[in-house]
Amino acid sequence: MKILNAYAIVDPTTDLAVFKKIAADFADLSVTYEHVTENAISALNHKNFDLLIIDKAIPRADYNKLHKLADILHADAALVAFIMSDEDFIRYKLAGLMAKWTDAHSESQTRFFDNPEM
Image 1 (spheres, rainbow, N blue to C red):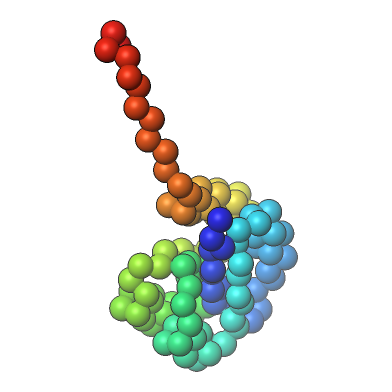
Image 2 (image 1 turned 45 degrees about the horizontal axis):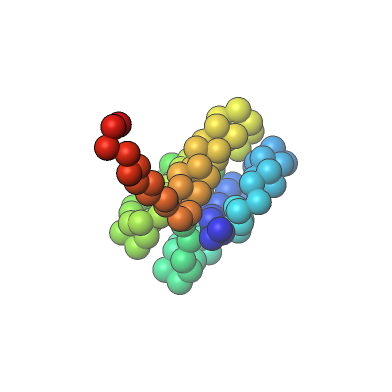
């Protein structure tokens, strides 16, 4: 199974304990954290990732800038915004994203039934 590479841009004052606890439950998820918006903008230009996670606590102008850059530079990456303390929503959203990731990166099987009576 291919690892889902996530890049999380979070406000420096945000407590990541809840998010990190939930992310640790997903073995195929690797998260890189960034607290400085300018470093995140640079990383968007130079790094590849499959999922961009933006903390809703960052300033709105930075959020909009990151969102637009991600749409332009990484159109194939998923983008989500979280309140990093909302455990239920984070768990729900990450579980859904990981299920889609698993489906997209696993071998599909086609079964043919050779029974003319069916």
